Amino acid sequence: MKNRIARLVKLGKIAIFEENLPTLQKDEVLVAIKSVGICGSDIHYFLEGGLGSFKQKLPMEMGHEPAGMVINSLAQEEFKKGDRVTIEPGRACFFCKWCVSGRQNLCLNVKFMGANAPGALADYVVVHKSQLAKIPAKMPFKMAALLEPLGIGLHAVNLIQPKNTESAVIFGAGPIGLCLMKILQKTGMKEIYLVDTLPYRVKFAEKMGATGAYVYRDAVAKIKKITNNVGATYTFDAAGTQDSITACGELVSVGGTVGLIGIPTEDLIIYNPHRLRTKEIKIQNVRRSNQTMHDCVKLFSDDFELERIITHSFDLNDVQKGFDLVSKFKDNVIKCVITNNSQNQPHDHTPLNK
Image 1 (cartoon, rainbow, N blue to C red):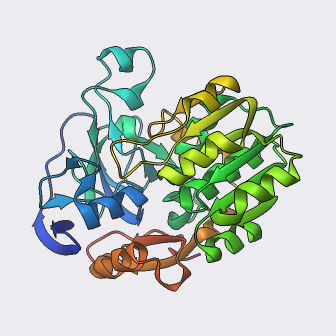
Image 2 (image 1 turned 135 degrees about the vertical axis):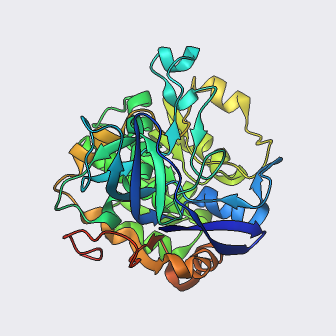
């Protein structure tokens, strides 16, 4: 049985290759991939070959937001054929300083899907049992592909521990920003504002339940007015730009916290240290997620409303179309998922598009 694998062969160009299935080792599981989300970091690699000054050698495999079904397992006590699963993209070593301290997202030896490990844009992937979390039979695979970005939002909330009686502003109304908003809503927070440079994303954020959503050029002045010039206790950057990070420092209230989630495309971001010092602001950087997948499955086991952010999907054979769409912000795209209906794969009883 062959395995189709999507690889970035040159900037802006993805090709499909066929190879033999990899061999399983102890505690590894073979998963048939059913859906994979296209992440903003994928687009950076697609267009620029990396993040900032870091460049990945091409060709490279891509995709790290997968869900699928177990078809073979050497971890039979935990996972059996037919189990529906979501996959944590980072395979930690579990023996370095950071793993031992419970911070596997900082693992010095991590193997991350689509970076220094095989990507999920394929028919099948081999993963370690520690990377898997079972999902309910009623959870659509498309929804399960959102659990990885939801895990990033949950990790940010776990680090910052925001009080639900306070307010938050999120810069970036893309998938990460919307997932973070959903996590904050789960904590009971009522006052959440979203900001984006794209008007269609602003309108979408309003439909998803934001207290207010604004185009960037108007946002700072409007939110200051709404909050009587106090600002928000928590501001989050989910865009990774100089402007969005600067605005986070401007809109955060005295004694508040800035959460930096977005991945900048530049190596150097400048912000005003005097403004942050005089307001005694805490800055919390957030790297990926940390052991949040199982919690996200529980949080969203009966709540699939966020699946609305998936505005587009393409089959693996048409992965190039998906990346072209997202990279050019075509057709009011919010989130695009690559699905897999290959005849070579086993089929699940749950409709893929349900």
